[in-house]
Amino acid sequence: DARVTQTPRHKVTEMGQEVTMRCQPILGHNTVFWYRQTMMQGLELLAYFRNRAPLDDSGMPKDRFSAEMPDATLATLKIQPSEPRDSAVYFCASGPGTGNTIYFGEGSWLTVV
Amino acid sequence: GENVEQHPSTLSVQEGDSAVIKCTYSDSASNYFPWYKQELGKRPQLIIDIRSNVGEKKDQRIAVTLNKTAKHFSLHITETQPEDSAVYFCAAVIAGNMLTFGGGTRLMVKP
Image (cartoon, rainbow over all chains, first blue to last red; front, side, top):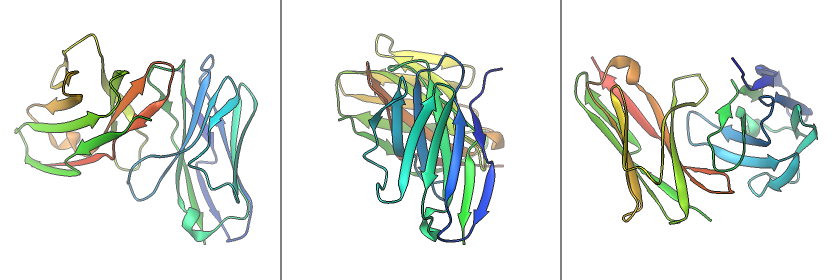
């Protein structure tokens, strides 16, 4: 059963520390998304990659957030420096191509104290 | 770009009743409409989807209808059960583009 894999599942860190979240998309999927969700609210799109190229990161605070895909099996989302308002669940999702559904990972639950 | 609005934001029904969640989209080029269910503490998971060449699709107690002319689509859940309690998200996709999600509906089924 192919799944999107995210690490870490849970992270508690102090304000000012760097946080890196990792995502392994489903093998063969060429679109990757990062979403942020707070308190079971809506899904806020942070970044979108197709064939490893960033297509849309307009929703991402550029001063502290960065997203990359070093290779087809790894996507990263980095926050530096982290702030308490960054506390949220960060979901990675992948899809087989545009115009199709996407599949979510279990999420990385981040708490910044 | 595409804009998707979802209503209501919260919905409370008695067990056994039906629940209906509605979404509207702005871009007539959208041609794929998935629905996701997110249980508390879990990830969103696809429960049903519909493409623009189909008007209705059913899967047991859930169904989705699409009105392309009016640019709206709806999720229908019949004979609701407590395990249907969750947040439901609709989405619209334009071919060659990414999903745009609605704001979500929190469904509560009271036993």
